[in-house]
Image (cartoon, rainbow, N blue to C red):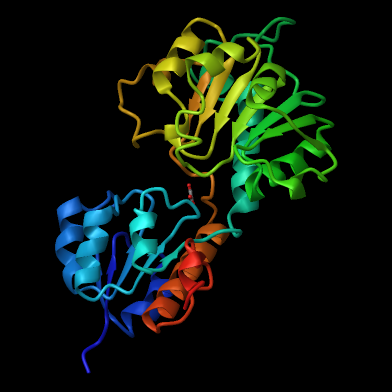
Length: 329
Ligand code: GLV
């Protein structure tokens, strides 16, 4: 019997991948940048399984082409899966794997680092020292904002949003949260209070995004929302770039409508080299690394492998993004 084939759009931890390369025929894209769309489309024709990253566009055409042949499972090494046409997959009962849970605290740590770095101007002040612009201590030199006792606004209150609220308790912060669909189980969390989006934007010193990208959260922050924020507030994004209208953000920062921003994500990535946000000293941009610690990324890789193995064996995926496919089975 011929071996099953797995298409892998990015190489990862060799010792974890070996579990697959030993057992299956694997076709692995070898570069650091994502493969061209055509490469995926051509190779999906004889693939039983597909391992993807969030940088790949896995649209209806790729999924239906795969399904016309042998495709049994897609396993993505990320918690988010907005790059995949999940509705098409679900309609055909094709399971999609993802990696929820393991990256929660790591991602919250990083979002917290962005809050701290923004408020205390860490990148800007480092640059001043490096360029010998800073010469001496002075009472008014490079003053920042206090985090302790400030108000944190969380847009999205799932696993990562709640991990942020836990961190905020240690900083004696007031926490407001907003989610497009209000969930009764969140009402009992002690140090966080539900707010409408408008109340949250008006009342927060730090607004941090922690939602899945969906029609309800796409461009959830635009001109109107930035106008509602305090002039002293910072906007933090470790979720998905498409949640922010970046032209509106440039306008808000340029016109001092908010104090600054820190973005780990952009839409589409990478941010163009000549983008105005890259020239602003009160905007920090990092390259989509909120979940990037070795321990967490290795756990994500291991879950990705568990998912693909289950899918190829016709079993229920342990970490499934569209579990509703199993309802009527
Ligand atoms: C990262 O953005 C992820 O979705 O895992």
